[in-house]
Image (cartoon, rainbow, N blue to C red):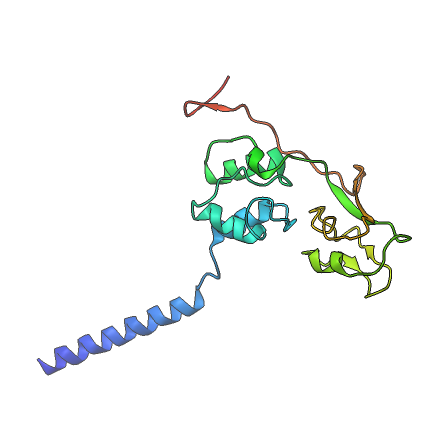
Length: 187
């Protein structure tokens, strides 16, 4: 009887050690679905979707708390990608969250800029450089076009300029698939 108890204890310890090792070795950092959704979102961190950034919006979509059609910068293409990933029905962009616009970057009129740093504080991706009481400028490659820097500027020296499609900025469009009708694809 004692030997059986010792054998069972030994087996339990071995299995517990194996499970403990597996929990550490194969631990998943975060939710993989959230990461996939976040990769589709445009990373503008603009807050137009009603969430403070793309990652919180991705978490809300994965948790079923938000619809997939709340991101104006992602536009129709982003909504289609999210619908395909999640197996949900495509819905047009929610007008309550804005309208789809072409990609734009902020441009600061350096002759008017007074160096107040309000635009630097508003920029979620640190695309504006400058110092207090000095002229500021925008790093085009970092600017996401979120327009959050425009409103705080007291002298209206920031404007959004539509980015022309060049060889460097062009990308393949997501293929348009016919809308689904009653669970089946339309012919």
